[in-house]
Length: 168
Image (cartoon, rainbow, N blue to C red; front, top):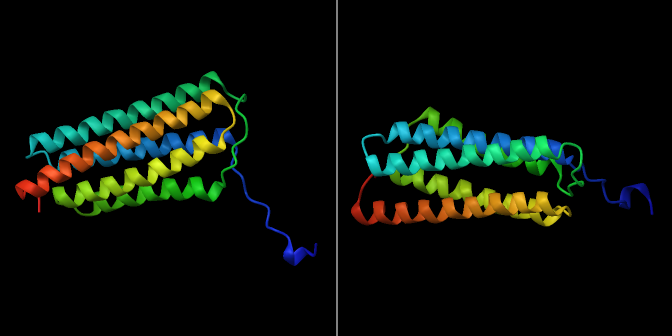
């Protein structure tokens, strides 16, 4: 094989770095939901949805933190490129910047949150598929399930808001 026809070597991320990035994503998501709760505090129901999501994201970050402390150094390698993990973090930071830059109407905020959570469902599912080690895989499967629950709750809220004409 000639050097020009060889596949480039992927820049795979180490599992501890992956977990740190995932923890940071969860904490950024919590900040997003807290900011949205503050922006929509006049609507108690919507503000409660945002605050609940923020608490759940903080809980996810704590799960990751605990996994890192308990199993430090014993994870199997991930087959995930570093750029993919960094892109996921950039998505969260981008949403946070938009939320802080300009308050979002309720409907727009819900749509943005659904898109973001759907991105993380795919990311966490990919991480779970690429991890050989059982406990770590289960962690990412649980994160994916949590993200799917967020999508369902946010889509339901969006449906209600849209039907009632709230937050446009």
